[in-house]
Image (cartoon, rainbow, N blue to C red):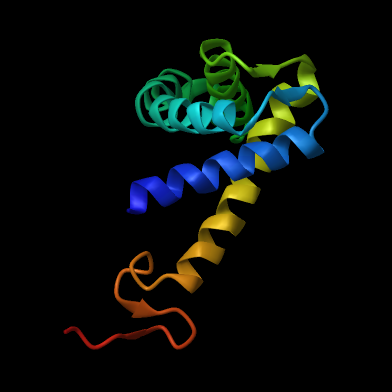
Length: 132
């Protein structure tokens, strides 16, 4: 259930990125769903490797090179998914930033509404819910 809702949240976030960021185009909702799966897979497998390899550059740039790593992963997902494309430097750099922000907002919204997602804690009071 959590993986399904995370994928839906990422797909909705990608649609928001399509609306807000010039240079990012998503054809339709099924393409956004497939892109959400690929973004998750790439962020879980390729991004840690790229981050480790680029650690010296990231250190020298005070962390700014992580924007490039995020853009590479975002563009790789766009390259692999038909109906999802990234064009230009604005889409490359700003797309992952807006995706992360929108995804955080939507995921927190779902977590407030669904007790399954908030790990057994009441979000408003931050106290443990009684188990049954």
